[in-house]
Image (cartoon, rainbow, N blue to C red; front, side):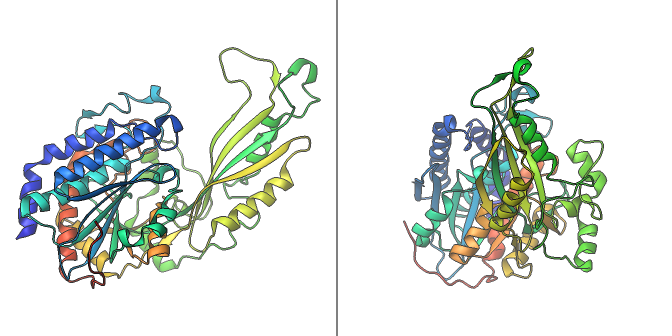
Length: 468
């Protein structure tokens, strides 16, 4: 009956969940921008206070080298599993703000969505767990399992401090299973359970030419131009058919069986659906694969940004002194970020034009992850989705990367359930991001059922005691 009491509480407090999301969106917690560090810290402080009001007695803000982690725990269910709940409260930059219909950090409700940066990725998904946990604590008086929460402030920059924190605080984060809510479902009435995530490698490419900008009338055609050199390097990364042209890039890619490809075709989005979600007239990429396969079972290399020279109003007749590009790779099973980085370094050294100096700096890295679909906690999640949404979930691969999934498994031996609630058209990482509010309500109910299902002896408890 505790699940029924929690559901009744959650349904009577739907407006509170929306208010909580709006409050979080107001914080411009952009982890990538040093100027926003205070905003990230303020968001962590707000979140910690909100967890205390929800009923958690043990709440801490744990410092890291950059942005803090918010931790809380409730460990009173003796003999029952311990669950680690993960989400992140940092967000992507909102640039260009001129593309937003309403200011990105001023939450706005239009139709059935709450709009603002981070509304779906990942503050809305965090709020779903917060509302479910509070519903049990306030509506039923206790949680059905032991719970630890890890709410991170660096996910959008690759979680650079998380490895060190997990190693230092092993006991604090020990658990039998973790749930990570930072993925998507197929639609408002089409839940989906993710069982694979791509890895990632971020790189920054700098090309230096003359010691200073030069007059293009005097030196154009004679002095090496780093922006033109950068353009030639970038153009060499793919062939005319959209396949990555870096030697060795595909060497370790694991072949996916015909049976799994058929299952993905049945469960995953069609090319037309992805094209509509991307709001583009055509889709491009590696031949021989559907768009969904290109974004899940195949790796990719994207140019995320280019800068150099003069981009202001009017003209400036110069040969630039430097140029810069940001590159991002998404990796699949058996690919290792360090091996792909070496392949890219060899390629760039081979194709770089003479007269310029090229440097490549590594940013975020994360290995690809495949989850055991038969794990009891995955079955519990499937039951929870069906009860929360009224229909069984599809099993999906995700093209995205969530670094904590691999870290929890590698460092702490914790199996992870990637149980997300974003929609394909939520606009994450782009302008006018939103959280679909009916989906948020179903997400809260699903999180309540997931806690209830875990308590049904589906995951054998192996830990005892608590860390306060």
